[in-house]
Amino acid sequence: MMSLRFMIALALLAMVFSPAPAPLSDWLSPLFPSPGQAQEAAPGPDEAVGPAALFLPLMVRGSQQAAAPTHSGEGTYYAATGAGNCSFDASPQDLMVAAMNHADYANAALCGAYVEAVGPQGTVTVRIVDRCPECAPGDIDFSKEAFEKIAPLAAGRVPIEWRITSPALEGPIVYRFKEGSNQWWTAVQIRNHRNPIAALEYRDASGEFKQIPRTSYNYFVAASGMGPGPYTLRVADLYGNALVDEGIPHVEGGEVAGSGQFPPGP
Image 1 (cartoon, rainbow, N blue to C red):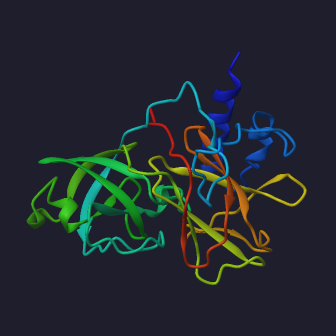
Image 2 (image 1 turned 60 degrees about the horizontal axis):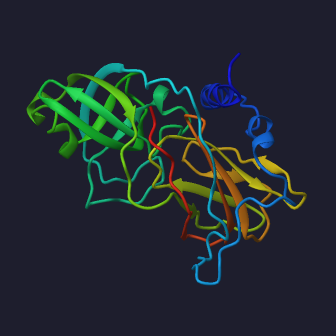
């Protein structure tokens, strides 16, 4: 019989690629305590507590994770800045970035994910920050700096193989609230995540977790709002791992650090 965690991982994979995903709460709610139950022991008097999280994050770790599949296609390059359809800021200090073809972009499912690509002359790891609408399935459009790691720029277009990877990152995941976000229309983005993000939920006034729809520009948008905050947020990655952060304040146009990071992927 399949374990519950394995069933969760399968459900999350289906959510990423299904046009009508089931609520994450249908699969994960039994694993989370109700609002009246303690999640973690309260910190002692000598322990610092930041405003972004009153408790350590509750982690559900996926098991029996399948290795990331290998894709094949062609690699090209463009004048990348780190910004793009994923709505991340420009990152001139780090241009190991790329744009994913429309099919594998999958409505922003791979935004912020890390991909290891192998070309004729080398291997490079890039962060997905943009969408390449004209690219065929399997293709990746790299920054010039990244393309040079796998082939000379003069080659222009080269065969590649790639897979999703899970590099070690510094610090926890980060919640970014969009400009114009408010208690009546709330837009949240997840940043600094080592694994692809599958779903985001918030706990409403009744204590129930509600899934927030994802947009193609990589914000999770609650069209009717999430209230003034602070929020309890539950984030799941592609492999069935989930983090819960409490006490996340609403900061329009700003970032709030979570209190944990996802474990390594398979």
